[in-house]
Length: 254
Image 1 (cartoon, rainbow, N blue to C red):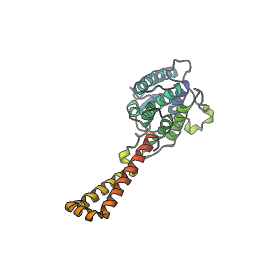
Image 2 (cartoon, rainbow, N blue to C red):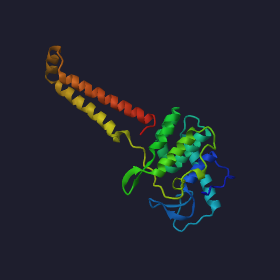
Image 3 (cartoon, helix red, strand yellow):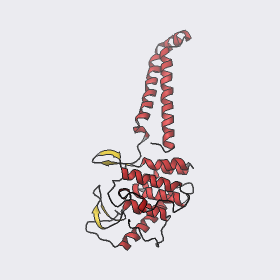
Image 4 (spheres, rainbow, N blue to C red):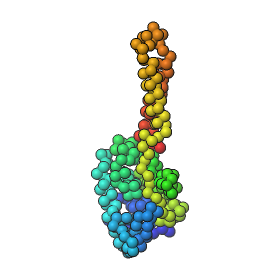
């Protein structure tokens, strides 16, 4: 069974969150380069780590406790709505993995602050991709971690995570290095959103061309130019696509 930090320490978040970070990061007491080449030690610590550094388990546990305290304060500072112990622990686990700056821009935080817990839980899943060998792809370990964090966010009891021995070893953390997740994709980069914008632009151009010549002799004697009708349909269709794509992201969908 995977080792865990010293539970007797004064942890700043619910133990279930500490357990999640521990199972995902793993603990190594000699400095090593992670999958991105960054020197790492202990429970995923990278700050101030250099080649040849060696820690004891006690040092690793104390550093994790202190760092989770920093991340807990950072997450709390960005909340405009109270969080349960489990919600805070889940968000701290996410922030520990992606950084406080990225967390501050995340759909998880936005949904939580507006009171939409289900959307916030779904939005954890937006952080499951990374660049592996230069290619952006979904990473199985990140997908599993995000699912556990989302479950913790919605959980009623602090100890609701499954026991470590119920988690497949390759997903328990500390077995394989997982790359740092890429930020949520911007809506502007969404092919669906781009299609909506293109539809609106096309409709606008068509309307502009149709409106030339004294508005096409007052739209053919109010018979109305068919091109204007098609342009209006294109603009409306594009606006509807953009509205629903934005709603999907607000609700935590990809």
